[in-house]
Image (cartoon, rainbow, N blue to C red; front, side, top):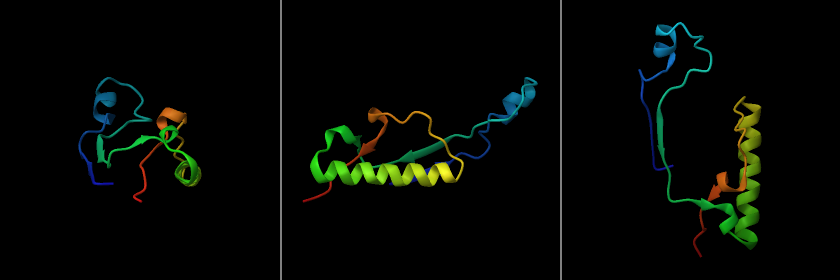
Amino acid sequence: MVWFHKFEGTSTTVIRKALGIDDTGSRILYIIVFRKLEPITALSGDEFLLAWWEVVKCHRTLWKKGVHHRDVSPSNLMGYHLGS
């Protein structure tokens, strides 16, 4: 990760409450800047296997913490080439 910022005061809770809508599931704006990533399908050999294993470990950790991605597909699995 190169940079991260949570924009306090941007929660959709305010809008939901004003409209009389349940605020369960409200969101806050985050911006996260990463180095340039490619779909892991662009990787091959050991790079692909390493990226795949990292994806599995990360998703398992997030799942255990209650974060469920729900759109795990090859185009959403990103990685970068390791330097030689």
